[in-house]
Length: 119
Image (cartoon, rainbow, N blue to C red; front, top):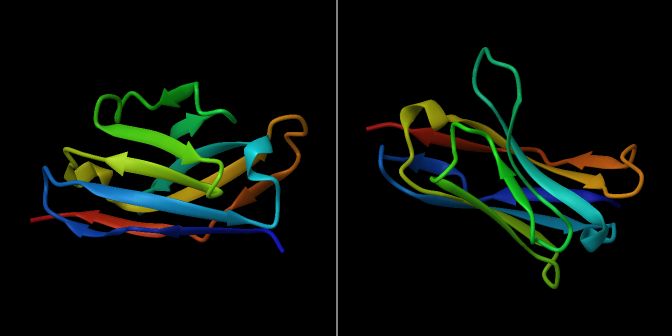
């Protein structure tokens, strides 16, 4: 059974930090490109960051560059999103996404974790 389970969300003050985790099971994690997306109320889901299979290549949305860092540990089947200098506009539900590097039709989503940035 394929599962992506996000954790680490919560309420944080502006300027604070959070680290999200995405624990994967049921598929060969190292064969998948991992991404984080987010969706704020009333807005479309947007891509935040992507990391390739070996972790050597990453991409970020302009809105989070320099503040967020995506990483992965293939031995632990886990992807991470370190978020720093958080802003109220970062408030959203954050989703983990896995896409097979060879067959892009194989893709999975987590259930999401809420991040709220507010004083």
